[in-house]
Image 1: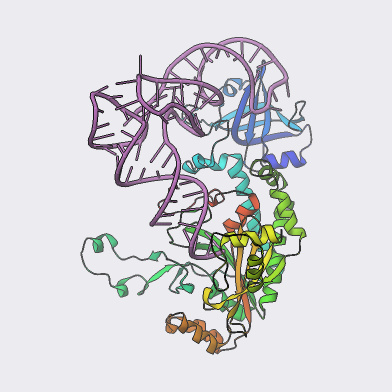
Image 2: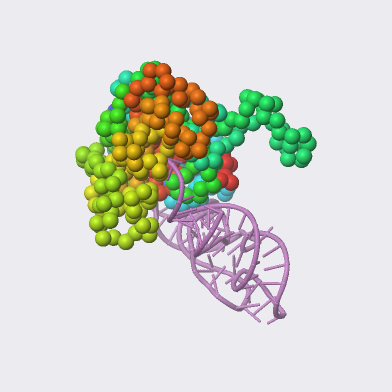
Length: 461
RNA sequence: UCCCCGGUAGCUCAGCGGUAGAGCGGGCGGCUGUUAACCGCUAGGUCGCAGGUUCGAAUCCUGCCCGGGGAGCCA
């Protein structure tokens, strides 16, 4: 008999159907002449309740089932007389596929802390929380592709190994085939020309520069791939390996980019709420009431627009004392960002036109020569969720900005060529995928919204 | 990297100088169309590691390791 997913059975099954379900036992409860087996197969948050009567040939097997066992069960789908579920399966046969010794199996039929679950990364996707995250994460990724594909954006795969030191954004992971053990032991000297690529290369910290190449040929593109930062940062919002979404749009200015980012966020949040209602209700219930209403509020609101200068003004007039001073020319701290979006406005805000001195060289210089056409999208509870800018498309200005940043223009020869030949106004932004997922699910620690977190000193699974 | 908090049974924690504890989970038994089931019994520990102080250290001190929260950096 063909196996059915529990999700499909609960959604479209009809009483009387002969079905086969396969999955993992969550719990088992015995009654006088029967046993209730909660089975989950990951297709949905809900368990399926299987009722096994002691007249079954395989009842001997049933009495051995413990949390974590994998099973294959055939029976008939019936309306459940009990509370808590509409349907259940009246078992005809129960097969044990894989045992799980209850003395040693780490997952118990009780709630575990997220910290403990991180230590058993190979088993934690079997929990309600990590399962829900996996489903929402997959749906969110799909929503992102769908949004851009529907708009005619091309999905481009930018390199993971790269020689371009994009924007000097922190430490990079070096990629090499040189014999590090021997070199460390003092045998021989490191010769870069002997290295695999004949030069120093690293794992990418951003696909933006390469995405610009394709935007300046195919108009609208986006990347969605892994990104690496070797920063020694130990926080609930940082990973050494994370995924980033980076649209790059030709013939687009800062206003157009702001419009795109607002439409984008509303779309993906709406898509997840519509397609993962059960998982989202779970997060709302167990990880903070208001998770859904906050998201819905964002979808329904009009994002506020503020220039950086106006934002500074607003913060200074707020009369509130901050740990870090508010003054024109220094970057907004997360306490400032959260005050703006949560207290002052109560909805998402797009802050634009930051001082040139605190932003990257490639951001387009405004006519006032003091600010650049940069934007951050700030949302309640998280702060910055998107950072982007209109790019500097004027060759002479870009050359000057590279020089002022103390960088070597020769290393950016191809980036400058894009301005030398057929340059056009263009703009793009970067969205941290895991941070977005954190925001959607209300998970407090980024290590719980990625399957296999890479953080300083930790890469077990 | 800096600041703060923590590491005791499988899990969550109490104990904070004088013989190692609870709840949950596990095992066994009872009861029951149950659903975080319920009731009883029971097993289970290098008190993170290494030094030190003390008659005596889970408890006090030092160093290290690991985890969490915050900061910086950012996405």
